[in-house]
Image (cartoon, rainbow, N blue to C red):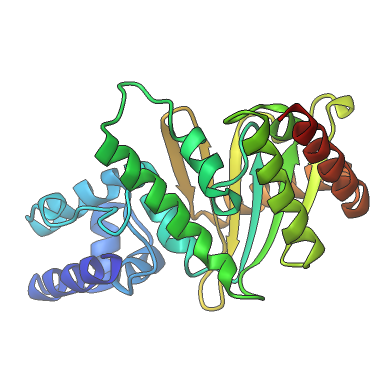
Amino acid sequence: MASAYGKWLRERREAAGLTQQELADATIMSRTHIAHVEAGRRVPSKEDAQRLDRALNTDVLSKFRPGEDGAVADYFEAARLLEQQATMIREFALSCVPGILQTPRYARAALGVSFPPRSEEEQAAFIAGRLERAKILDDPATPVVWAVLDESVLRRRVGGPAVMAEQLERLVHLVETERVRVHVLPFGLGVHPLLQGMLSLMWFEDQPPAAYSEGVSIGRMHDSPAVVERLQGAYDLALSDALPLTESLALLRATAKDYGHHD
């Protein structure tokens, strides 16, 4: 969908007789961002799309509907598309296991509570979308994935003990097979620089790194090099305070075993 949007945008820009730089100036965006959108590597935010509408005298939002190949929250669509292109992903999770690492039962439980309640069809579409994202781990090497988890991710009983035991065993398997690195930020640490919410950092072969942060019903892509660098620094600082890989793995195993005993 992003490539179709980019092609449409390029055609409209050229029909208007504008260069990428001229369109960037008219929309208060960078030429690089316009180029990424036209190449299908970026999805514009709603605000960017509205500025493009005004500059090109079009109604792009009526032609562009994100999430057609698996439901996700609208604000996450740009991050989902970039996630599929990334060569390295570094995740931080404060309360739930990151989406690409979730088991089907965990995903079903995590997505099962919403307001207003979703219909069964909507619920099934969101679950399918999340599991589709997890397929990027089917490749044995790319993307490289690291995850820093607040200890609350391990302790919060999403779906009950059996679901949690299965989920943590999945993380153990991913670590043991060296597909994913997982580091835990223990409760005893107290505060750390990522306490405000979820963060995903992404690197690519042919474009600058990007970041995505999320809170309650809101998510934001970050393309600004200065902002991305600051978020990378916060992640690195939190990672330096996390448990080493071997200790994190031991904690995952022990916690999974505890949940198994409750089943």
